[in-house]
Amino acid sequence: MSDKHLAAGSPCPPLEPGVLRCYSMRYCPFAQRARLVLAAKQVRFDIVNINLRQKPDWFLAKNPLGKVPALEAGGETIYESTIVCDYLDDRFPEPALYPNDPWEKARDRVYVELWAKVYGPMYKIYSAKGDQQTMAEAFESFLSGLDIFETELSRRGTTYFGGVRPAMLDYMIWPHSERFAMLTMFAGEGYEIPRDRYPNMLSWIGKMKEDPAVRKSYFTPEEHLKFIKGMINGNPDYDGEE
Ligand SMILES: N[C@@H](CCC(=O)N[C@@H](CS)C(=O)NCC(=O)O)C(=O)O
Image 1 (spheres, rainbow, N blue to C red):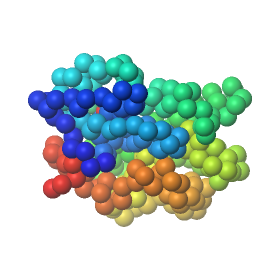
Image 2 (image 1 turned 90 degrees about the vertical axis):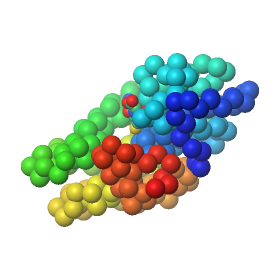
Image 3 (image 1 turned 30 degrees about the vertical axis):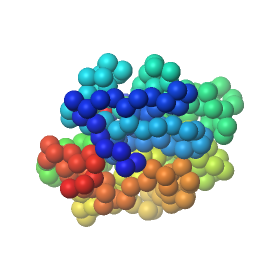
Image 4 (image 1 turned 45 degrees about the vertical axis):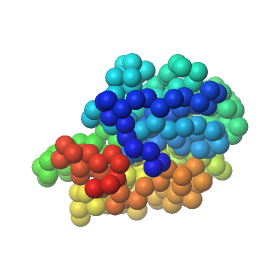
């Protein structure tokens, strides 16, 4: 993860035959999804970090959407985090990250989509430019979104959404969850996640932090905060150097 973020003008590093490549950005929660699944399945891969402010042309040629993550294999590329992660689950069956039952699998995918109700409002808080009313309303929406997951985890009655170990749904919602502590630091008092309302989700966060795949891609709240502040000021420090 020490690789510099490549900007327009820098050449595309040569691809080692037979090795998967993940195009990423250090602090991108969607790229983190892909890195989590790659780590959970212990797949050998290389990382190419992209400067998303000045994207190299060769990256845009590989992914016309211009977003990370993207996964390259044998000169072809797929993108969109859920597509990439589902592909990885099909290609590397161990450990299986979806339930065997097709309905249960589809339900987990539904919950991955529902997660937008949590991270969407979270981004609104960042981009509110300090407007207290906008921030407070977004925080209420964020909590309502989180209620869905608290209720579902309580209904499942398990430590993880995947049962006794993290599975696809856990990994898909982890990256934004890792940033919850940063949200509190960013927005200040009143933006803590209430323990009495979210006992299951808060203990889930504690358990997820112990997972080996999570530990590999983990950044502290302070590191996330530094990045998000730079992002808001129009000067994202992709390489974490400033
Ligand atoms: N729906 C996409 C979202 C990916 C995404 O928004 N990535 C951001 C970085 S966190 C990005 O690449 N932004 C560059 C851009 O939109 O130009 C996914 O799930 O992969």
